[in-house]
Amino acid sequence: MSSETYPGGIDAVLAQYEGRRDPFSYAPGEGLAPLDSDLAALAAQTVADPAADREERPPFRSSYHRKRFKLRQELTGQSELVVLHGLTVSHLRKRAWPAHAPALFQRLWAEQGDHLLGALDPRWLVSAVTTFGDHGATPVQRSTGLALTALFGTMKLYESERLYSGLTPDRAFPLSGKVRASLPMDMDGFALQSGGLDVNLIGRLWQEAEGCAVIRPLAHRLLTLLIQDDRTVMRRLRIMRARKARKSNTPEDPEPKPAPRPPAAPAVEALRWGIVATVKAPLCQIARFAAHHLDLGAEALHLYLDDPQPGAMHYLSRDPRIIVTACDAAYYQAIGKTRPDAHQQRQALNATRALKAADGLHWLAHIDVDEFLIADRPVTRALAGLPPDAAVARLPPLEALARDDGWPEHFKLTDRDAGAPPGALQEIYPTFGLHLRAGFLSHSKGKAFARTGIPGTRFGIHTMKLRGEEVETAATLDGLWLAHVHAPDWAYFAERLEFRRTRGSYRPQEGRPELGAADLIDFLLAEQGEAGLRLFFDEVCADTPALRDRLKAHGMLRHHRFDLDGAVTRVFGRAP
Image 1 (cartoon, rainbow, N blue to C red):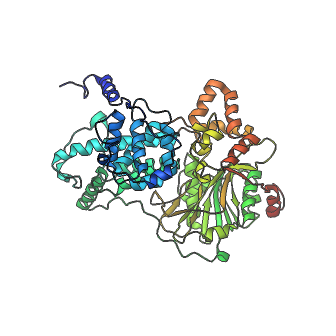
Image 2: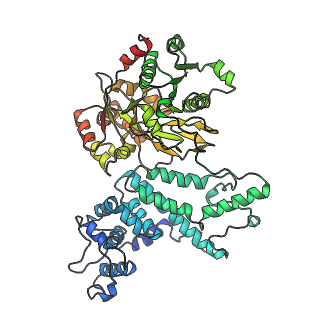
């Protein structure tokens, strides 16, 4: 037998692959339905048995006729829209296809996604997600589609081979049958009791799909079906894990669970909220941050000074609502911790300490010194309106547009929070939109308010966690936004660039297949230097009438005028 799995190597693989992709042939008058087809009308029409239709039944006039007959026969009783979807997918699997086929596929899922999700079986759902991988209109569509295609394709191969073991797919292997052998390609083995590869795969794909409103429902449906099916390798491994835990009398790894039911919510008049932040900034900036949020009604501000400066504690402590902690050597010695090297770890540590000590508050938000709450209504009313079982509430982010003549007044939303259509980012940022996650340079996940008094919880950077897992009982706050002044002007952006490239938000994201903002910045610096970077900044960050108009057209622009200096005067009496 050849030393290669496929004799002839990759050339033979590609030849066989391409041999299955010959385009359809057509008889006169045949072809894929036009792009402007009435999809709603097709969704209301039922497919009849093609064998009873003289125009549909054999003899076949073309390969297209043969495929259409086969699909209509398979989908008899379904809607004509489902048949059109099948024909569109079939065309897009070929080496060549009608020019309008990719746009028609996008239209089908953007306008009739709910109908298709209700009508298609799992096999067709996988075919659809594969087509997104090949013909996605956005990086998220392509990366999600390709990743899910690889996952389900590999599962099909493995599960088919496993049938020869003599066990049905719902039966796990006995623990006693394991042999000692190395895995192919020198892979490390999966740790049955502590391994998290399955969770990492599913969670990563779920989050990736959240970046596109068109593919998100399809991808989430497939992953939900995967989680619910009791005949998969994932389910069998969980069964084997439980058996091993019982055998060794050690507790099974806890499942990720939502937080316990929160304490009863107080009346809006009695509700108290606060903020925790680990800050490293000039005192004037810290004062503006603190004063703004006290002005909004915060009952307590827990400020951890990451690099304490002379006079800062004295000035800030003048207001009794501010609890100031100097994070010096004495602080870390007192809490029995070594100072973490990464600032993100220091932030999470301090925020968790504040959460555990926030007995007098009902809600605590963890944000940064360059982030400011914007409230369309009193914060207490927004928090009181949350579901009673919500343990954590998301603060949707806004990113400031930069200006050189004052504090930012215009802010952009993510495409997802604005409900913008697919392709909006490419229209708003014609040169660089393809490489921007949600249209932001900074984080697009937002931050969080955490309900206090829930045992076993701690803060992460963006949300609250229970036993290391993100809390699932999350809600989005209505009428509250988090304005992130990430790059208020060009000078600040340029000054902070190196830190953010090496230790902050411009670090490359591991596992992302497409060119992201971090890679783009590196490329521009290498190829064009500061001129290329300035071109990028002007298109993506600068507060220009043209950018505001494009954002406004997609519902992604918000205006807010801050009175930070006035707040400092009202709270502290004078500026530092």
